[in-house]
Amino acid sequence: MNPQTARHVATLEEHRGLTSLTEITSSPDPQAHYARLRAQWGEVAPVEIERKDDVVVPAWLVLGHAENCHVMRSEVDYSRNAANWRWNRENLLPAGTAIGTFAPPAPRPTSFYHDGPERERLRAPLDDALAALDERAVRDQTRYMCERVIERMGDSGSGDLVKVYSRPVGFLAMTTTLGFDLETGARLMADSAAVVSGDGEQVAKAQASTAAIVMEHIGQRRQDGGQDLIGHLVGHPNFAHDGEIATSAIVPVSAAAIFLTAWITQTLHQLLADRELSARMSGGRLTLDGTLDQVLWRRSPIAQSPALRYARNDVQLGGRSIRKGDALVLAIAAANADPAVHTDDLWDEVDNRSHLSWGTGPHACPAPRLARLIARTAVDHLLRHRDVQLTVPESSLPAAASPWVRHAEKLPVTWQRATDRGAFR
Image (cartoon, rainbow, N blue to C red; front, top):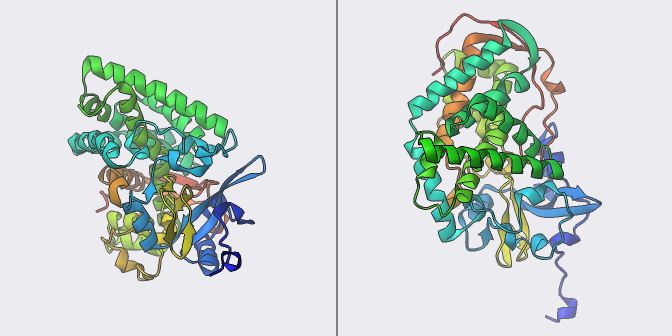
């Protein structure tokens, strides 16, 4: 074919009028956006990560379940190291972008940002530390945390359930597991709120503050030992220096802020708004674990993964030409709803954990058991000890403005002391 007559294939940066990730995630119906993008582009579509100083930062949004699995499992063609991102290599990213803090040009020393042998070296300590945790102790700590937060709510009252319960319980339970006291956990929670705010300058300051707190704790654990998560990390031989320990410890801190709050909020939201779902659970036809799984399938707390991938080579994916250096965003909520793997039958989701909310492949979430333990305990404790009612129609509940996380920004409720019902199963 004559090169002059060959059809021009638009590069990622040449596409205009892109849908933003925040628009998708915070809309009343994200699946409608995914369906529109599929109809227009297929299983891989160009989107806007964010806009800064009139500069649109683009990426490929991976919609299909099979395509997401392929990207997650292939370190040959798709890297987690943002040094491979063309926008970093060519210094195209405007200063102060939020994505710049998640995608640094020089990878931080944690498995989150590395591939291959270096990922394996840095991932093993986290896997080993999580395996060494006493889950009974974690459950007891989480119960204690839930009780303290519920006591602060009082026997009756009204307020935003996200603010007064979901966020503090999920976050403080995780920071306690890491070994922090409540006061330090509250400081870390404030920093993490800034990290998900989307303000680039606030994100950078909050990450620096978190790093300083974690480094101080590492020093304490070197002196006095300890069986918390950081205590287990400190003694691992794979780490070359304390900076590697700190960055590895910050991963679950960030996960608590981003994922646990959203998962607890989404589950409580559905149980409060969907009477049929609540009746099935309270009547014993659906377990609490089954309810948590249904939320992961249908309302994944991570709508789009903040763990971007970067093409190592020119590749074809979902009928699209991906250039070396392009960024790819994994649309978890779209993949979970892909008709190729998912039906409309709710019972198909019971004990079915083939969704991608935990990811898959070498970078799959290291702590699904821990996250489930905390989320299950948090939901169970609140519903056993307080009768909670939404005070506004579900249709009036806006979603949090985030490119990544999907949950109600607020849950206005009333509550009063409940008769102890016994734990949900």
